Image (cartoon, rainbow, N blue to C red; front, side, top):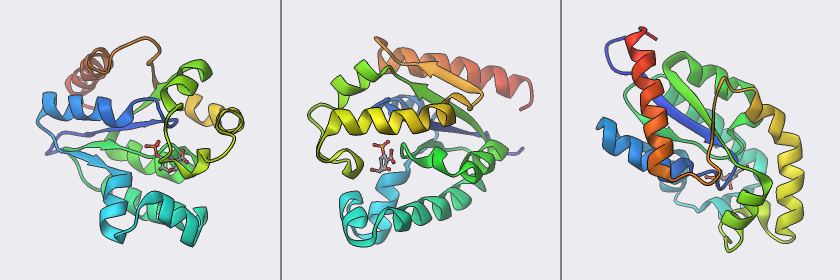
Length: 175
Ligand code: S3P
């Protein structure tokens, strides 16, 4: 591979993908591509607007198309949306060119991190109940990713350092 493989961060909302992504981008000199932000820029709509006006299925299509595009490139840190794992093709595509890492957090940690948040359409209303339900269906999908990192009680810098070590080992091994 001519350029370095991507680092792709997946995980439930509130696991710190974007924050950790910033540290990784800084440390590696690779650009951070935040998929939700890019979708918002390109559609000129916010994520809540897309969900409200066009529905979740339409958002998933945008996410799928962007995955296909980004998975063909190298040398980027990609912060994905929490629902990326819902389509296994997304993970399969990214794994061809990327080190895919899943950030994990306990239900308790997620509840506390997402408490004051009003930007996520899937958590509108009975937030705690929705987090529980989503986690129940998605947990096996996150657990199925080969590289997982526990983020409970750990700083984003510490998590980024652990990912960098793994990334460097992978590069040395020619992955
Ligand atoms: C979603 C997570 C969000 C965003 C959208 C749907 C999900 O991204 O893509 O609201 O289905 O879990 P974050 O994980 O960055 O919050």
